[in-house]
Structure formats: structure tokens, C-alpha cells
Image 1 (spheres, one colour):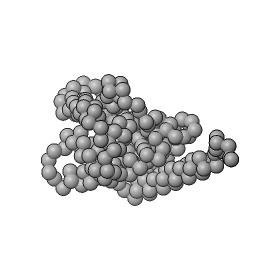
Image 2 (image 1 turned 30 degrees about the vertical axis):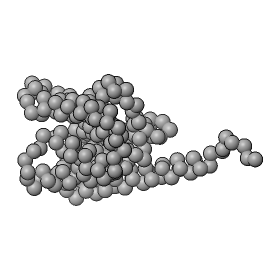
Image 3 (image 1 turned 180 degrees about the vertical axis):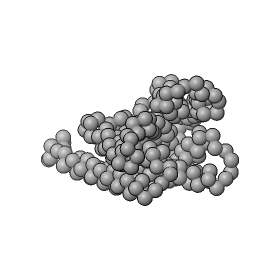
Image 4 (image 1 turned 90 degrees about the horizontal axis):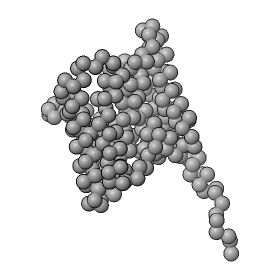
Length: 234
């Protein structure tokens, strides 16, 4: 890995974890009554860190909201509006209320995190061996949550983050879409207390999204292979 990227990574992480401490380790947000704003501020560190580092070190950003999709509407619908509608409908049928104040803040929270972990950190660590990169991302992601106690719950959480760094990382590599990465990230935040209905919904969404990515990738590769050559045949 280029040694010039090390100061960039340090800058990104210092900003990310400093803002995390201010929003989660102090009483800074205690007087904010707006739930949406409070959730957004708690996850804004990686996004701010990524943006500042991209600009400061003039590092080009590989991932965008739409990524490799032809337009923004498709990933916005399949990865955001569709799950929001499904989760809201299930909540309404079960509790008689639509949790708009939960669904979209969780999605935006996931987007802010993914701007940092996949949008920046995973990209600059690509020169490392794949599993070394996954481990570094997972470790820094875990420490960002300020969970330093050695407990079974925290070790389990660290394992989940390793799995997430691998899985969300593959989605990021195949789509370059922050919306797609944020959607997979947000599933864990939506379904922390699982029951049968939540497990079924979670499974259905993952299957639909994975099939979407596979279908999109195959079509993209097929289109690339069918593209005419610019070099005339001799």
C-alpha cells in the first residue's frame, strides 16, 4: 500500500472517532429532541471523515449513490423505498402504526457510515490482501463504536462486523453504490430484536437484493463482452 495513504487513513479515522465520541460519549446531544437529527448526528463521523480526507488529500472517490447502475432511481427504489415500504407495512399490520421516524433515519445512518467504511476505507485498503483489508476495516469499525470491554456480546458483535465487512464489501465492489451498501448495513439496525416475522422479512430482502446484484453484474459483464471493438480487424 502507498505510504502516502497512511496519513489519509489516520486523518479519516481521527475525525470519525472524535465525532463519535462527541455524539455518543458525551451529553452533547442530550438537549436535542428531534430523533431523526440525533440518529443522523450519531453516525455522521465516518461521512465527515471521508469527505474531508477526499478533499484534503485529493483522493478520487470510487463509490457514488447510484454506483454502476444506469440511473439513481433503480437503486433508490430497490434498496431504499422497497424495504421501507415492506417494513412500514408489516409494522402497521402488527402495531397499527407506521414507523417513519425509525425507517428513514436508520437508512440515512447506514449511508453515513458506509460513506466512510466502504466509500473511503475499503477503497484505500485495496492494495492489501483481501482478508487483511476485511480485518482492518472490521477492527476500526468495531473500535469506532467505542465498545472496548472484552465480553461475549462484544466478541460476537466483532464477528458480525467481520462478516459485514466481507459481505457489504462484496456488494460495494460489485455495484460501487453507496445506496446498496447502506441498505445491507441498515438491516442489522432494523432487526436487532428478531422474531419470526422479522427473520422472514430479513431473509426475503437479502435474497431479493443479492439476486438483483447478481443479475445486474451478469448483465453488465455480458454488455461489456458484446460491446464492439474500436480496433478494425486486419
